[in-house]
Length: 423
Ligand code: MEV
Image 1 (cartoon, helix red, strand yellow):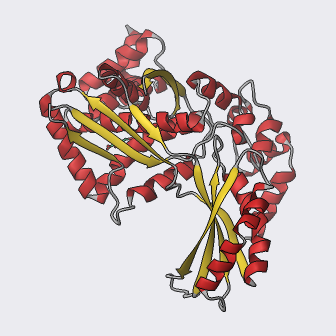
Image 2 (tube, helix red, strand yellow):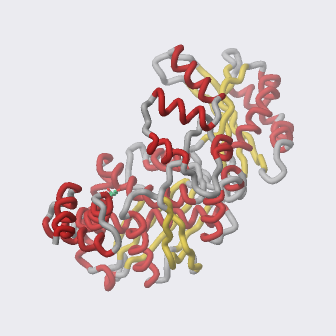
Image 3 (cartoon, rainbow, N blue to C red):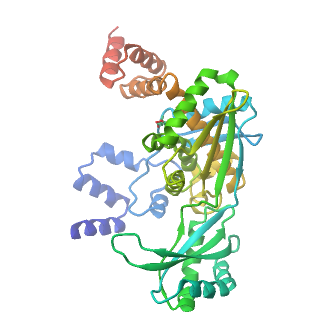
């Protein structure tokens, strides 16, 4: 334990060369591997990335792609998506094309309302008395919170009584919640600052002790709802019924629902990463929301309209921002936002929800028909062909041969390449 601490402290103080020497000597990285780490994209210096995170040693690139003609609320977007999974952009693309025939996705979004929580332990305080005192001082608390930001607004204060349900039985506590409209920011920093700013006043008012002061990532007041119609004439009546079976499975069985929702998040996370969002916050909120009924269920809903078309809907909490944070410092994120051509966090959230729905459609459509391996294998085979050394036209030719033979492996790809080169 002590040794580990010593190493990480030393790394913090090391410059780039010293860190590379450490990796070479202590972890036996080869010169080639060191070169991979040192080979930073043009817009990043070692100092940049070392300011972004602690103990930086390099950058791990993820491909960035786009989906063109993605129509939301009658506006056409070019959506940037960053992902390493080969089929994700193709899947979003396919669904977007089909939905555009019926007029595109429609979406609506709540205001950017987030909650900050202050945990107050005060064993001798009666909840009703405390509530009265806190609410009497509500304006004062809001003023203190609002002194911390010009753009973001703390709007309300609420209070809840809580009993420890853990094995430790720590007893009763009160949770003071501050309701904040973060507008176009994701809002984590400003809410945390506000919580910390009002905590001393809360202690003074209550004679209690505050412990945690932090935003809640369960952003249930910041929901997005999106909808799309997939015309029967475009996708076929039979597949619609099969998709409804896929939905029934996901709605009713958490083991399937987790995978179904993973497909939804494939799309949402890819846009989140491209636009510099806190995708961990988005993920944790999404999965908690999937369980809001008491059972973990599908985040999307699929039904059939009277005229036999497929209707897809999604409702999901999405705390995203288009100002502040990494958006100011990350050149790729700035560029992605420019490609998307949006001005508000709400617009971004609506696009993301639609991409999640699109992604889910393509996944369950494939699963309910030919299965996903056929499409996945096509893309996977190309990667295998490249890994084996194929270049240019060779890639598609070799990938097709591997698929035809039903043996998509590097070994077989190498064998086939060798045959070609001997000819
Ligand atoms: C793979 O990344 C995502 C899927 O498993 C989603 C699903 O099963 O619905 C195809």
